[in-house]
Image (cartoon, rainbow over all chains, first blue to last red; front, top):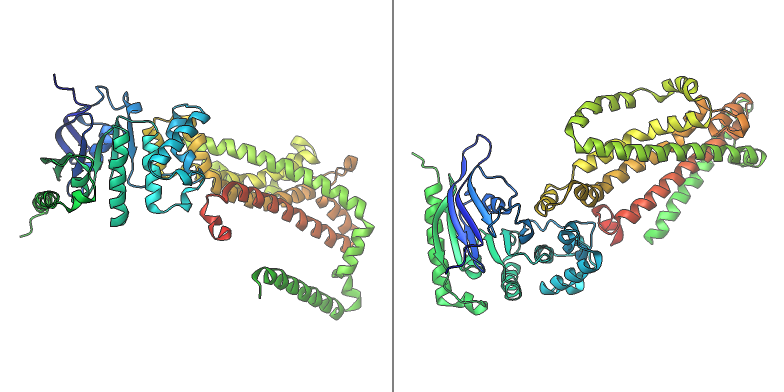
Length: 260
Length: 263
């Protein structure tokens, strides 16, 4: 008997006020352990879709279930990593990681123990006493990921978390993210503009089109985990990156206004 | 030159130059007019001569300034919280807060004397009125200027209102609060002095520096008047130094305004 999906979107439609339709009848499911990347031209509603799954934005029409509940009811099961690290500058790294636990009413000792453990996971065990302003961009983002992992979520929503980082740091963090996943089995929805990143991280890539935002195609990534630098250099990987890039370019060209 | 040494020597040299110019002006004045500008030596003499009354007056003014300042902090925090929670309350109350600020406090003095009597109570109320506005405006601004991403993060984790206020909005408003506190700290001794000048009372040795200034002025004790001014200045410095120290303690670990100083 097949396992019911962890995340299910049925005819999800979103419109802000009386404005145009931002997302049009999105149907998508993700099972346990899926790593789904959402990729598409700017304005196609990738981030909005993520926020709908998180329950941060209300739906206009359709339905979203996470762990067979509404996103609000499933709040304890999901975590969100924003585009910016969104760290509280007045708290040390350890206390920043403990914020979601504090908001759930978990005691100080347990909070500190969990924070230290997840900081080790993102290789920042020695930076717990530092303040965010003392960290590099990549380190801040690792703290942000550690904070999201502190609650051991079943679903991790990442909204272009590495977009502001340089290529090298981004590749390192991609590898770290997959390494962490070896220890914690979460399902992920990952918004990105980078085709290479999407292919490296995911087992499924959802290509979206804009105006209105909709699913254009879905591509399965066949490479086994764990993925390493060798994966990036393989012929199959490069071919798939080229194929997804071509698809994305055709979607982007179709989204451009036609000039006479 | 060593920058630390420079920061001591340059103000010291400017001070010495200032005193030299002071003496030069004084001795250039006609003899019958020299009483208008006492020398630093004469002012030091006035300290010795009026030490007891100045000390008593300083304590009274400090008491009025501290009580008014503390009341302004407490009331402004509560009001700022209410203003930040509802734009409706903000829009409704802001014009009246502005009116309160725009009306010169000196106009309230006779009314306050009638309402609460001359002396400490009036001094405290006048100090409160002078300190209150910068505190409430800055703190409210801080509470409503919380980074939207951080607010969203708290909503994502379903924080309740109290958690959002006390774990997020209040700490994030601290730099604004301390800006208001710094302005209020410079105003508190001035407020107490003005209050004392306009609504003070010497009953039971209750007179402060403002009241003392009226007495010295009526007795043409100009060196003592200058001594009173010097004491007020020192009092202001102490208030501001305390607030700056508190601000440093609360912010230097994380706020960008202290970054350069720490490096």
